[in-house]
Image (cartoon, rainbow, N blue to C red):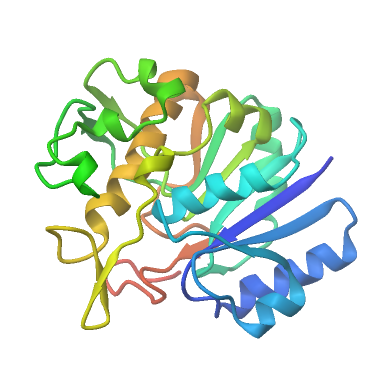
Length: 253
């Protein structure tokens, strides 16, 4: 049984994650770690892990897709997609996820996220680039996956901070979104990254994971999606930081 960790993010400073992954990979020949970077990694990351610096496009979903395109993964590989600012409280989450996969679940998240109504035909007047101005959400989807986006639907969401799946199921849903042409780096004004006609990164930082979650719901069904906790951001195993820090409204337990 092969296990692949794919990590992305801007922080690269959580010792519980970095040290734990380094020890896991060192002590287990069936565990591999890959850092999918959208900025130059720290010396520590370079020294401890396999990594590649990719075009900074698509937020974390873009980084995950770039990684699986780069790596030669087998269908039965268990893949953990992680933000680099999560705090690991108990590494037993690996066994918990394996057990849930064996029970037939297809997608495992860390914490319960909000359900939401998603309309693939909604548009943004100002797109991620001029090519996408006035385009619908579905127009950001890879051509081979667009047929899935045929109706407005309430979706159960899985936060991209932590996703566990078998690689064959990642392939079944067509990988992550968006399509290649939407892998556009954010603008930077006075040191602050943002997209066109937006104050920050949330406009597309929320859209791209929603596209992926729509596919998860459509292909696997709500009953095949599970979470390690009903709390927001927090589980007995992992805490998901917000922009590298603890959310005061959702503290770690």
